[in-house]
Image (cartoon, rainbow, N blue to C red):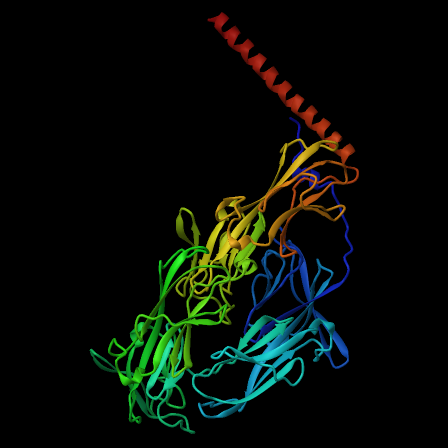
Length: 630
């Protein structure tokens, strides 16, 4: 009856831990965004932290503060390119070469070395099909070298995005060059590989789409370039691009000597070589295009991918994928499409399906098994000219699953971080009862979604503050390949109140999933387990002394002996993914203090009850006297 609130007991505990100094490596490409963590995310918003950065200039070290937040100015560091979020993590937006250095926060005994990946070419400008170019990828490090053990087992590799083949040629560990001739289609990326695993990908900014004679193909949302005769050395000064469909012909872009910059803006624009650039391709762009100094028309066809059902795709479900080529005449009977076919490719197994309805439509029915990723290939003469990924992908368990404890904060990423601030994104949440939009940001209301418990940051990621059980579900970002499943870890005890030293308590840790309480039948949770940890002894309990109910529910019966502190660990593949502390803890001298607080609590309650009883007696006497007078 006179129980002590867990928060009051927590105030009695003061533990000082001196951790060993550790080092961590974080890499990002120029223009990307990186997040440097500062210890385990706190349940309460970050109220005091100082981030410092150290760089090396010749033989000297220079250290300065880059961001700080205090109780008197809690919002001061939440703005700018380098800012601190509520978990005390440092966000570095639009990464530059000047950001290289090692960072540390005032709460942690850990150095985080931030390295930046740069890509360049020789020659640098006016790259065109048929030219020879040397690509260079370089990792800029704290000391200018990669001799530190931090970079052990690391290498840089150039990847042909069309053929999905990697080059092993490199100058040294942190510099790799590749010389080749530009053949359409052409697209290359630099991969940072550690222990055989790709940690970061930086795309070379110049790409060329497929061109076969007078045919250009591209997927919805992609960018294509329509060439206008031989590239000119001088800037393009007089050209008109027209588009023809079955309904007529219109001018889509025009540039002249009097208005040289007029056509360099917009989704369809002309570059200095007179080529027409079509950004963010749509189905409406299908047609025949002609440049005024070009003898032949260029037929632009668009590849679309869809599925049935179209929404709420889940692991274990059956889906029919459809890939279709939209052409100028609505068919593929023209000789332009001779020797062409569409094929579905299993991106995980790298195997292609030859099943197709006709030359320009291919379907594939299959069961979704994680990991799961498919792309549609446009093949001409045995050569892949274009690849369009199906927009829904399911990665391995740890990539599409996010776990957090009640009251904690989680971040759901939305694809690759954008260089520019996030300007158009919609986050939706699905449960067994339906799908709802939980956050939306657009160009018209760019700041509308930056407030509230669920809000969108500049990287388009969804931040969920003060996590509750109601947040469990499947989340999807409109430009994200795969849904993210958010599960919540809950801890409880029996009895739930009046925990005292010497008493016996049964602790229960449970994972609330998309399927329900303690339901982990999906392959998402393969290799996952929950364990109770004795924080004092730093020992983990798998199944003793009390057995585990199932994969997502674990119980432990123990006797409270101060000092006493337990936490529930979510372990995936032997790695701790999340830690949720049981809210009641006892320090070494807590028994004496707890009894003292308990006695005072009882005396206070007795005093209150006594006052209430006395007031009730007085009220009865007044009422009785009034009746006697009447």
